[in-house]
Image 1 (spheres, rainbow, N blue to C red):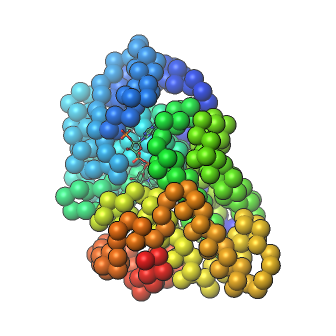
Image 2 (image 1 turned 90 degrees about the vertical axis):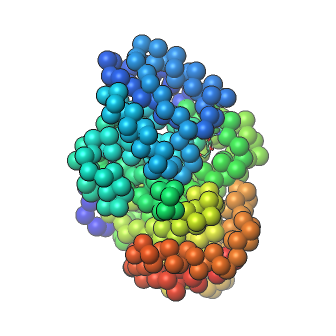
Length: 385
Ligand code: NZQ
Ligand code: ZN
């Protein structure tokens, strides 16, 4: 195991009715800027519940943060936060709204060109406004991590940043608030969480059995509970387990002391930037191909994954690896997320465009061994045509 330092300061308030706790969690006397997306919170009652909990606070609002949030939109909120001298942000929504809040929190206190925050991966951030979140879509883990992904609409650039200054102070996770999700977003969330675990697990053995078994436990839970969230959409216990799995998948814990990959995400971000695919849709396309082109480098972990996650014990090593990759692709499809470019009306021209975009961004040494170059990316995507 590698050396590591782990500190996650986000307080989690989990369960039904926890939105009421906002009254105590949001600092008294702070001017609050409530952030939200395209309006789902207004039609499912979350907006009213949050406003009721904050009836004793001064609350301003900024809605309209889009999925894959735009730099251009968020800069309007930054101006509002500065002009009104806002002291606390509250993100109410999915990963896009929470990621947006992280950017607004940092940009509001940053004196240079705000795009620096993204072009330098968060290194320029010295401070950020404090913020909390009310999560309505389990998927990204943004509610308990320090990462954010923002798109500059004008140039179709999707860039991430990380900073210890942008952990949420608290996050409310009420599984009942996820019951209104459309099936597409339920499927997306499960696939995103699954791939987060894979990015931190499917590398090479690092003598880290605790991390491995946490990761396998999350994968098994997502495989068991994910399909139930589609077939039994009113089952709150299922939603609770999906929600907690997604948070645990990317709150840093399973990734401590182990190598990490993240190539699937880097390639997937370009597919979203170029063609507007949902984040999880891109992951379902990319991961099976990456597993295949990396089968030698990832051989030991692929065999462990095949046995412990999919129970594959028969046949030779190569056939078990093939079966594990097939099972992974079938799971994504079972969650209603097509795993081929053709499923989204895309063809080989998209592969050229993605490779060109990755080269322009300098993202040509991806993966835990930095060996996923343009040729490997091309090969992986070709397997998912
Ligand atoms: O905008 P509204 O009207 O709220 O509707 C949203 C949106 O259309 C809707 N929705 C959310 N909660 C709902 C609901 N509809 C009905 N009922 C509810 N309870 O769902 C749609 C998608 O929302 P979005 O926030 O975009 O989805 P998600 O949570 O999947 O976030 C995706 C974004 O997170 C980034 C992705 O790149 C993408 O931009 N990621 C962030 C990460 C992080 N911070 O660590 C890691 C991830 O790998 C990912 O890259
Ligand atoms: Zn993701």
